[in-house]
Image (cartoon, rainbow, N blue to C red; front, side, top):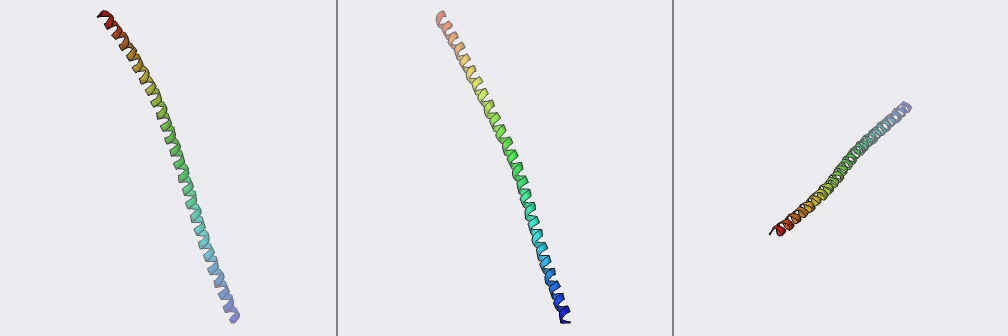
Length: 92
């Protein structure tokens, strides 16, 4: 009788330990899923940042071209103005 009780207790101990191990494994799996989700979010964020950087660089390049075009236009306008002023002075 005593031996049966000890075997039952031992089995219960093993069962408790088995359930604790399962809970621990479940916790580890949950953490792994969370880490995987975080890595996925980080990759998506990195992609978005790279797209933003590309857009900013393109806008910067476009602004440089526009500024150069504007400066060239102003320079041409000044040359025409100077030419017109010389003609006016000559006519006066």
